[in-house]
Amino acid sequence: MSPYPTAVFGLVPLAICLVAAAFHFESVPTFVLDDVSPKTVQVQLFEWNWDSVADECQKFLGPAGYGFVQVSPPQEHVSGTQWWTSYQPVSYKIYSKRGNRVQFQQMVTQCHDAGVGVIADSILNHMTGMDSGTGVSGSTFTHYDYPGLYQYNDFHHCGVEPYDDIKNYTNRYELQNCQLVGLADLNTGSSYVQQSIINYVNDLRTMGVDGFRLDAAKHIDTNEIATMLASVKGNPYITQEVTYSGVGDVQPGEYTQNGDVQEFRYPATLNKAFSSGNISALQDLDSRGWVPGNKANVFVANHDTERSEGLDSLNISSPSNTYILATIFSLGYPYGHPSILSSYRFADKGEGAPNGGAGACSGNGGSGSWLCQHRFTPVSGMVGFRNNVGSSPVTNWVSPQSNQIAFGRGSLGYLAINNADTPWTSSFSTSLPNGIYCDVISGSMSNGSCSGRNATVSDGSFNATISPRNALALHTTAETTHTLKVGNLAGRHRWGGKYLFMTISLLFLLSPFRL
Image 1 (cartoon, helix red, strand yellow):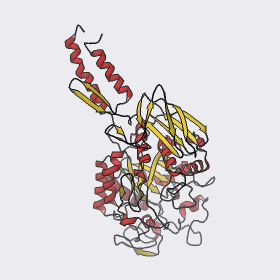
Image 2 (cartoon, rainbow, N blue to C red):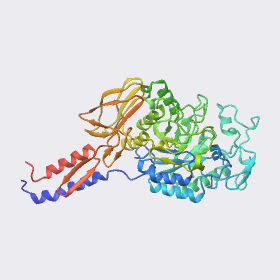
Image 3 (tube, one colour):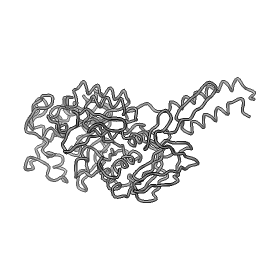
Image 4 (cartoon, rainbow, N blue to C red):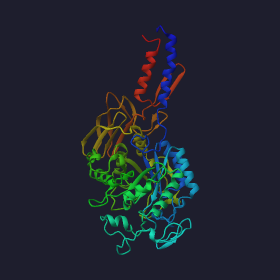
């Protein structure tokens, strides 16, 4: 027995406090998107109305660990049910077919309450492509006249015949001074136009919007964007649509001074790798001369690529589960800040959202024509994986054949992908601590138990068979429940191995009954 029983028992509560601290180790939700943020995954709820976005933030996005929701353009646009009408602004009123200003504000507030930031898709390059019409809020317009906002001289008139449209997509002048498929091209070098755009963006910032996707950013000079952003309130997250067409074109790297850039070579590369059967070639994406990983916004598909033959990507209809496997890889590999597309089925490429834009999901999938990819078990499971592993490096990379890869994320996670048509049975080397882990591809954790399969890590390895066209993912916040009893204290929690070991060791060292 210890000669100092009073002192020792006085220290036992300290050990119990350390136990409690382990229970509350997770970070407070943050809206700052950087390399150390615990929640960096974005989900694009394409064409969802504001009420349904708010509901989904509360019911699923927040609890699942999504960091941001990207919503469709909130400004007034031309009338019509087609999705592309949202991308033809009529005014900067916060009024669209998805809801009015009050509904938009309520959506932002409810998403914030759920720990989810809001990114607004923003159309700053142009106005409409129509001769005349009336917007969804009643504003009338002609092609170069938007009463109270813009007139003829506020637009570019590049002189390319006919119609001032871009003809040569490798010519910088045409790309940034002519009309994109007939859309009235704003003179974004004009101080008046810049201030009008700044006022709109700051209005959204005042409403709590945390970031902006700049649609058609390639068609605006990067320095003009920088000038406008310098007058935007605070430091919002920025991602810019800059497609890559080859040498001589406007280059994506020019825009990293303003924030993230959507890296369109990424979905094309994943499409080729998963479709041709050489995913082993994906090991060093940061060395390809693309946008640096800390400035890249990456995706397997977005609303444009799934509808365009010229923008190469996988989609929900791709064979052999390749779309899901590529999404798993995107969330597991550290290059870039990933976005997940959540969309709907369509027969025609211009078809608008079903149910009047009222997004609907059910369980781990969609409802009706809504797909709800963000709810798929492997996708939401990998969101938790990415939040947990953070910026941990890739370790223990193995690829026994071109269609099979496995790698760790430091000592916090491990991912294996089998893109082959045969099972993959192996003993996998890992830096994960000893323990029993839930495979978040096949199931999820609830009350300390896994609805899918488990894998047991012992002395730096585990055995598993991965079925054809499938994957396995383990991480330290998806362990099975351990129970600890100290006197009348009983605690149940998903313990990381190091916290369990430290706490039990400390209790033992402080115990007056140790030998």
